[in-house]
Length: 581
Image 1 (cartoon, rainbow, N blue to C red):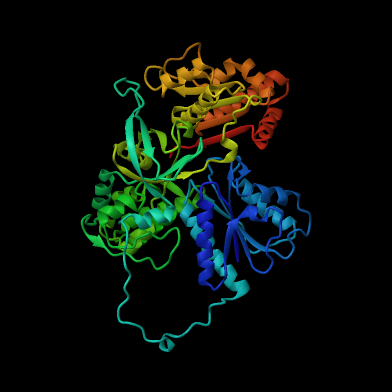
Image 2 (spheres, rainbow, N blue to C red; image 1 turned 120 degrees about the vertical axis):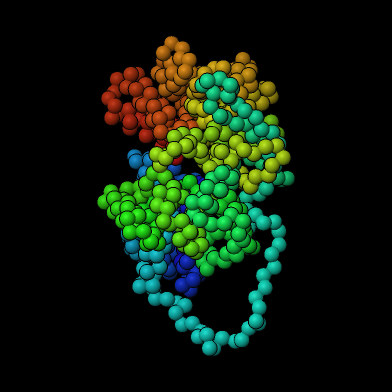
């Protein structure tokens, strides 16, 4: 059985490996590889092929682009004899491109003569992602058993097994978090510097933090790469969860997973409840309808059970769109107090999702020192999404706001998509657009340009549109960037939402105001890079460029949208954006 993935940040690769483990338990010999291993076709016909793929701004991931290029041109019969299934991973927040590449792969394989084993699976990162993957895994297992039989069905009976020793002994080595680090490919890294990037004494000040991380010996990175960091839950959240769930934070658990894979906790030794809740499980992930159904089944109070069943029914009635409700599992248990102390640990451990790494754009350049990486972290802070009293703070950002010099974090360098790397040459103008900490990769790119100019390089023009609240509050790394502007490495174009100049509040407004220059550079072949908020800033910037096209070409809005799609297809308009939870 062959499992092929299209994955930029490793999620689909990890799911492919989990599916391979599930298939191996049925007796299949498995191979896991990127889709581009079959850039010229040649898909196996001697066993099933399972594709796990995502989209990136509607385009294939870096390790799937060549395969998709081949597949879109493949004629009838090019995949004859192939039996396949597809699991698509996406995010409904990006409705225009949701599941675009997985759907294309599924449809084109069928057109090329391959036989579909089962309907395409859809996993939504904004919904019950883990539940959707579990459902696909179960459906795939049934399909494999029905079509191929169970190659491992003839098992040795217990009576025929040779007698073994009375005791099984496993030697535990390394530190208590080593198994957790291995699961995610992380290494210990030391925080060397921290500081505030915004003036928190100003009424408009919002917390933004600077961190400098010492990379492991022999490590390195390229400008615009990410640092994947495994956070720890806030101690207050841990104590609250223990209280709400009715568990003793000081008790010690000896947990052994009966199945391996991405959803099993990587524990190789006993762990305290406090450490388990702090380092291993998500405490603020949105609760799903499936989780609510489990809570209903365990609730001994009829009115509370009925209320939970209504939540499940409402989610089912909504057609499963998203599959989540406001608030977390802990919130839902707190709202139904009869559940306190009623959830056995095996049930709780299946309900609580494993803690996942968060990705942050590195804000420095290796030219300033390849042995260290800088981050700029904006604290995700908003009214609690469940409607309960208090403030919601993001797990990852609040963790990185708590660390101090000398602390150790678990992290890894994660290469960014190649298309997002900013070019530096004399032919290609660059337009960089970001708001808040979306400035991060562009700070590194500007440092690269300063180093190249200092070495005598001739560079095409570069503009950096940067949105923040106020010039005296959160113009991040202002002195450094204004020095780069004076040196000619970049032309900084800030926009201040709380201190607008000439009616310009946001980056899209300044792009519109300076449309002549932006259009001239775009027509000259400029590469446009957008980073940061995907809910408001990125759509506003896209609309600004569509309006630029309409104004300067005389064409209509539909043609403008097609023009922007062509820029994206050429790699000249690239986004690295996120939607806050």
